[in-house]
Length: 591
Image (cartoon, rainbow, N blue to C red; front, side, top):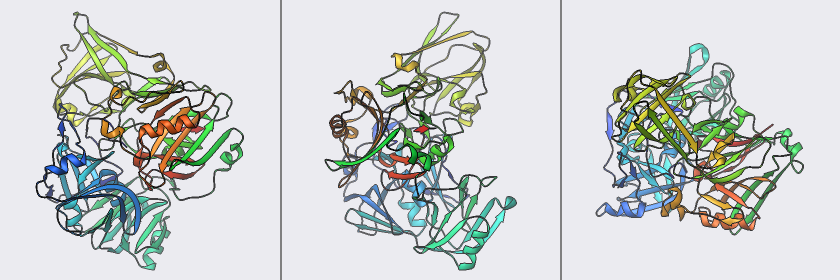
């Protein structure tokens, strides 16, 4: 549920990268959202903005079938008949991970989508939300790729025409595999690896196996598993699919179901309990542990390239060796940046926003829950002082924000007009203009970057000494580990859900969806997922009521929807909407 914050910020590409010199396809004009200032817009609710399309009938649903594979996903169809819409809005997560569409953000902030040589440019103001997901009008891309589109009630069917695999080639010492095709193909990142909508001969499958991939024919296409590609590139004219494998054997994709890790099996019903139950039409998975006595440690799970980027929950768990893992807090799927608190070993990788709920803990201790913000300022020897509105944050606000090396090796502008000054050992060493920030500037160890947005000015220059001050609003902000989410659901055995106090809209609060929750009953830590058995899932108030019924005292909502996931000993029994989405960070139990 990465769209649960009233701001859109665009930045970086996903795992799939596309390269093309083809002319862009113009996106049909979308309905408009509500202006939030700073060039950002809050997506309007579907019922509101579709009504603005005069004479267009609106149809929507929550079930999607792609090349005969079903999943839950919100979609919106405007106009036309059951096979020819005038607009078709799909979640960006579906386009990237289930169709093989690549994305990148242009320096001005607009989104560029690529699929086998066809490019679709989407201005940042034309991104919209479908419930909890960022959505794009993808009709132009699908039409160029000859994808068959059909609406059957609440079910949307997308079927690739089915390209033929012409030949298999290699490069870069065998670490690059090129599939030459006679046309575009749907490329799905799913359980066990990639599902590609191409027809292949037996000798071609054998050639792929000889390169270290597990290749098999399945449902009119091919399934590929084995070493997880470091990146997948689609090229056009002629159509090609490029798989860049890791330099070594690398990480083997193990999303497919299998036996539990024996180390976890040995802990079940001893140190750790895993309860699976259904209450009020909600399927609940609850993992319980006493961190004061357990051999497992609770840790945030993060990527290895700074704050920019997304991974699957299984990748995050595997990197840290976590036996149990759930997804973490909110993020911006387009920019691939965190939206909320993330503190690891006493270092703020991403600061809290909007006084939202957090969970904080020390090694070997029960977590604490509350709402948190950072209060800070920067002052010069000339007596001038400015408030700091954010620390290492993907949440764009007017004012001055601070970025440190914990953010990553580079900083790139997150809004249209920014200026900055670089600090080293408390002295200004450089002023940076918008052009430099748009391209990106390095953040070496020891440097700090003050970034001004929305008309804010930084009155200091090279040689000026500056003093930075920051402190958390609550003591839990000083803990070694902090993970943010929101809203806070329970505190001291009482329901404390207050969406407006944490910057959540009424539409978000009233929406049913798969949920991920971290909680405590006063004796044990609980990692919980909740999914509807007959509907989209519980609302936040319904979630809070269910948690009280389970005897919990404190509880924090994390990201949900397609982000919801649970990894148990190498298996993934919970995928929020039926497929494993990419997320920014997670929370795990690590030996």
